[in-house]
Amino acid sequence: MDLKVAIVVVCLCALTITPTEAGIPKCCITTKRYIPPQVLFKVRRFDVQQITGACDIPALILHIKDKKKPMCAHPKVKRMLTKILGKRKIRISTLGVPK
Image (cartoon, rainbow, N blue to C red):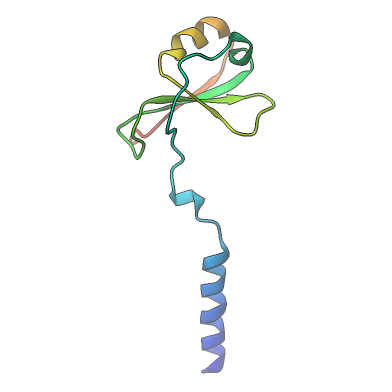
């Protein structure tokens, strides 16, 4: 009986130690309307955050070279971003849309 209790305690400890970020969506709370062109040239990819999911506001999540944290931009920045990047292939994903 003691072995079963020890196993349950170990399992509960393991559950409390493991990170829970997978279940919590990361959403933009505010957005910037103006992003300098020098920053837009460094965008590796961007995600589209929509209000249909867990997030409250529409936004572009810009993943920028040499930055750890992504930047939140207003959806109107997408037009300028695609204009600057031209034919360069970048990865686009849509967040908050059921698949």
